[in-house]
Image (cartoon, rainbow, N blue to C red):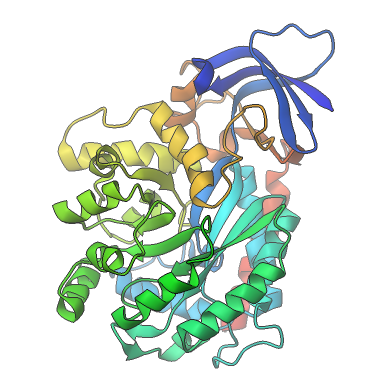
Length: 445
């Protein structure tokens, strides 16, 4: 057992930020949490401490696109062409290096768990690797080496659009059928250590899986009562229009029709919704993963976050394409985007946004025992420096974390009772990213 004395820590169940919080950690979990303590002997932890943060939507290989896809005009669809260029060339070895560096960047930003929306399954020509889960296992190993937990959201992708065959680089995404996808996912589930990695299931979108296949997807999850299910939903107006033309209903209504809208579902983006969509999603108590830095980078639009929450949905946050990896920026962007859309302030409190990034985020990834500094929870800590030029004078409380701090203000990070990031690690992480991204683009030359 190791005892730490946290100078300031966010404990929402104890009234918010408290001083001198004694935490005891044993076997990776909190065994005691005592505010206003004066222990005779404990390791001091200086700064403002919040629980480990959850990144609920990641495409690790997109990290190679940062600073490159922003160099011209275009739309989501022209950005996608550049993304396909990277997706076409990665193999398990290169993916391990790029994902590990990306996950280390996440760890340095305070992220202790990531949901990896994984569809780079096969060789570029669509044939399986000798181990058909080689790419997924590379992600698991990357997270292990970075020190964070991962939920591999193994993604079904069968169509280039509403029943049309997969084409181009998409052939490496496709298993050919729901049955073959489900069999491969079962093999991945058997091959991971549940202490640090989980496997969830995902459908890329209603564009990529035909309506006739959605019921079969639901059937594959019938014996998995706690397994997360994620899906991109209504990110683009064109997706809604195509779904209406193909099925006569919106993507949310289509998922509901086939039993895929429930309290284990996470809807990613959920940007362009009807009033009926919002009611359906809220009634299902589904999670919604907003990714504001990506949604603004791609010009997707601003989703109705507050209306979804008021209807009963649970907000989580992701960095998606990694135009930015900064969970603090994602938190405040939810509120700031609502201000732009409504010309009013004060839609989300700092405590609500921190809950989205911690407890609700972890729950949506299948880790309900993480995301809080509380007895029995996984011992994750994020130490923020309250005296940087960004954070100084801002109150040293939850408002500092949400509305002032940035990833660069994180000084130390603990995951499962182990310090995985120390002040001064950023230079080495930068060098690793430089090397991994450079090698990825050299492979494209």
